[in-house]
Amino acid sequence: MSATRFTILAVISAAGTVAAADPAVRLAETFDEKNVCRVEIKSEISGKIRVPVGEGKPAKTVDLSGRHRFQYDERPLSTEDAAGKKLVRAYRTVEFTRTIGGQEQKADIRPEVRRMVVMRSDKGKKAPFSPDGPLTFDEIDVVKNDLFCPALVAGLLPTKAVTTGTKWRATDEAVADLTDLDKVESGGLDVEFVGVIESNKRKYAKLSLSGTVKGTSEDGPGRQQIDGTAYFDLEANRLSYLKLNGVHEMLDDKGQATGKIEGVFTLTREVSPKADEFSDTALKGVELKPTDDNTQLLYDNPDLGVKFLHPRRWRVGVVQGRQLTLDEPQGGWAKFTVLPAAKTPTPAAFQDEVKAFLAKEKVKLSPVPAPKRWQEKPAVDRFGMDVEAQNGKLRMEFALLTSANGGVTVDARLPEKLTAELAPDLDRVLKTLSVTKKITEAK
Image (cartoon, rainbow, N blue to C red; front, side, top):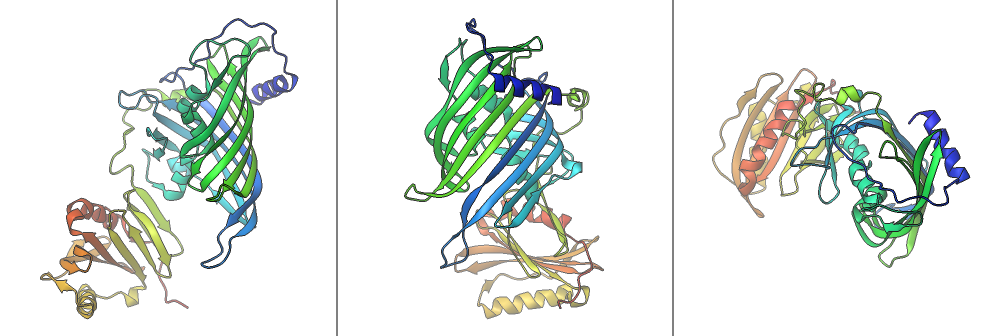
């Protein structure tokens, strides 16, 4: 939002000059391809939280503070299968800083993937992807807690015309979007139409918001108290400003507060100055639907010296020393070991190591074929076998990447009943696996 518009609204809010008797007004915003908005979100938080120290040790209380500012342009994608649930968005500014116990954390989005498609499920979960390249898990983490204006605005506004003093309850969907709660368990957010305010020959409907909400988020159970003000531009039919003051208490299993965070949040919205970038002509040829390719995640660890893409259902698990694991929720698993070039075995030697290990573990094997060159650049050799383990039949896949910078051995376990489903996932990972720096001997 422009500095002028922001100043006007701030003055209006402070003065509270509301007309004494307003006629009934209809507060409704249409989200379609013509509603291309410039959105700016700012928040500041501070407080104390309890963090785990280690197994068998009591959690300790530490200070927390944070500040973030996002600015982006967005257009709804009004398709039959996703009306009001899909946006194409271009991030212009991303500033995210948080300090927990003296440790500063920062997050960003790479410039090359700042254009995204953000989808919202019926359960409120937001799943972004970029048509311009794979996102990292951290980039998705930044976006997933951002607001989704079609759900928020529709849930804050009344469903019928209102007059001064009319009150209504915001929808649970809107409250969950504002609070990051997975589910609203009790309480709610009440909205009141205070009246119409005129400024610079433009009329705004002023709303007040207040309430206490209890629910569960990814951080556990919590309770939030919210008070705020919103302005609806009656000429543009747009929610243009929202400011909230909030207190969030983390709760234990007995409902007792274990931490407290206070914060201030502001949202401003106006017509995008770059709406032409979101026209049908500008988006022609851009893949705006999720595919197996554009929803892959990028894992790039410069310290370990390894990079690859992987499907979203797989998650990077343990990263320790020169090893990391990929875990799949239905039982798939893969371990990657990064080696200096001089320590990288030949394909035959790698297979002998595998056979010796499995024999020692008394694993019953099917015939093991010789390793075969599967990819040339970088060189990848593979072999696999079916085994009978204590927890059932498995397909074991092994791969060896060899390059001038170093090598990577891959040991993957796929449950037999899921092999046909998960094997293509493993192929995708191996096709993109690379060693990004010269791997040296550990000191």
